Image (cartoon, rainbow, N blue to C red; front, side, top):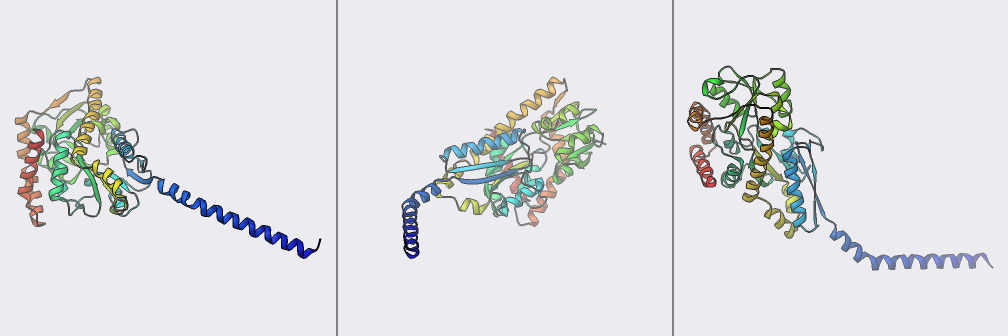
Length: 352
């Protein structure tokens, strides 16, 4: 058999195989495209709270609810405890810049960036979380659109009642604040504590218990569920429930990530946003707080409820904080006094 004949036969077989392969790909490619089209859209969500916390579990509930209603066309990967890098105040920027698709954070971490939203940090303006949360969401739809225009907000809600967790003595009346060193969560809360006669000490959430144990502060201001998670309840002996400070929380989405979704998936996201979700997150936060209250009771710690008349004295003592906030809003072109009145009316509305 000649060498030329062998080479010719080999070339023919090679060409035949290549042709068959191309034919298979041409037949299979529509199916491959269909399979790719059916692959779920994956969104990454980032937060500072650890997986053991009630807040993380609430976010996971929301993610699973959205996935279920999307019929398998959307997947949300939740990363807690800053697993994707950075510090807690970085989450807003991560969402805005597209580092992540979704983020759950406290606007108060970005001091001065969200002046309208800071109204909810004013002392004694709030209410239980399931009431004040939809009020927050409704208020920001009216006044907060500009300062949140760089992202796509899903929901705003409240952490509910603040609690003053004291190590050695209780806080029950205005005079009890004098001379106390209290951990403060924000600039406005610091101003309120100063007006009440205390010395505010800024301390990150995860360092509160250590500061309390080592007498860096006499007490810390934080909700029940947070105090339970970091064992601040165990380090304290007295707990005063108040609306001194109610931090606002925000679930946010990157604008481009939202914009790329199909109309069907946008509809699912929209249906799981806004007022009803604010109420639900508020209820869930209050449910998580019950465990903190139960822990304090199991340790036989006194829980002090401040009478309305006494809390009115505290509100009057902090009027300077309101005046300063209203003046700041007016300087920025907002109707500061009207904004306070509007929010208070919203709280009354959702109470009823």
